[in-house]
Image (cartoon, rainbow, N blue to C red; front, side, top):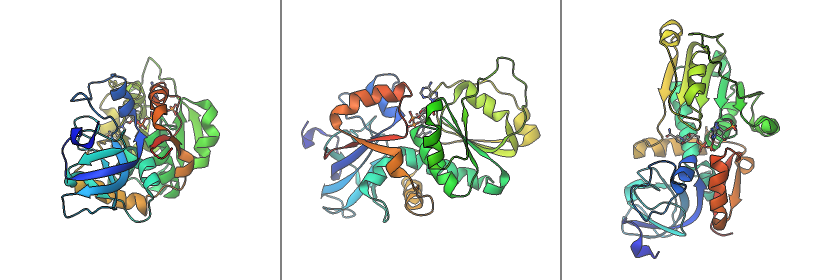
Amino acid sequence: MNVDELDAGDVVVRIAYASINYKDALTARGKAKIAMKFPLVVGIDLAGVVEESSDARFSKGDEVIVHSFGLGAEHDGGYAEVGRFPADWVIPLPKGLSLFEASALGVAGNTAAWAIDLMELNGLAPQKGKVLVNGATGGVASIAIDILAQRGYHVVAMSGKASQADYLKSLGAKDVIGRADVPERQRPLEDPQWAGAMDSVGGAQLGWLIRRMRRDGVIAAFGNASGAAFDGNVLPFILRGVRLLGVNVNNPYETMARLWQRLATDLRPKHLDHIARRIRFDQLEGAFDDLLAAKVTGRQVVDFSL
Ligand SMILES: NC(=O)c1ccc[n+]([C@@H]2O[C@H](COP(=O)([O-])OP(=O)(O)OC[C@H]3O[C@@H](n4cnc5c(N)ncnc54)[C@H](OP(=O)(O)O)[C@@H]3O)[C@@H](O)[C@H]2O)c1
């Protein structure tokens, strides 16, 4: 495609990096109805340098991030050397982050930051108790573990990948547990264990988590990697005051920009170089399949200079 064939916008960006998110793999493999047009450049986030802008807020050479607003679904996304976007979607790269770090964070980082922001607004604090992170080796979860550990939380990582315990501990998890088998016969309340929980997995696992939260425990539910439907009952909510928070990263621009500022400062992960690895554009196909098969640890970023 040439630039004129890309979707309309005020800002043309030379894309340096674009990350691979679960949603990208679903789109590319036709596993969910995400693509709203065809052909579509997939890729729900990107970081790069402005090449041309008809909007006064941006000039040639500015380093920027773009994600959400239907990117990679309704509007051509990040898996291309050049993209064109409405200026209202373009976020200036915050001071303190490199373009690679911004892409390593990408939608996953913004989701982790939003979930933690919401959980703390709803009463979560390190002294309240342990925080469980489910689907722990995933992109959002890896970043969340790093951020939570730095904020002083006792993080328990729950993963289907027994072999990755050292990786999870290197990010700051204090304990690593295998994915729990959810029993067929369920009690309405189980032994209370966690003050907080972040869930990428959904399905029966989420139902199980809700029943194990402590008094006033806070859950951020943001994913459905293993399914959507779960069984539940009201007792955790009315007897323990459990708070189930829905997390959707597609926030208004001001919220996204505020979260990017936090990711560059007080929510800045320490281990992005360890969490994210660079791949070539021609490795995308394999990367999608690996992600859907839960074989990937951390984040994968397409580096257009490779
Ligand atoms: N709500 C939002 O706005 C928002 C934003 C971003 C992402 N998400 C969602 O959050 C979830 C995580 O996204 P991500 O980009 O971090 O994905 P990811 O890197 O693929 O991580 C997903 C992790 O979930 C675990 N998992 C458990 N059961 C699985 C299964 N049956 N298939 C695949 N993985 C399974 C795996 O971790 P272990 O092997 O360690 O258990 C896997 O690494 C996805 O559902 C995604 O769509 C939502």
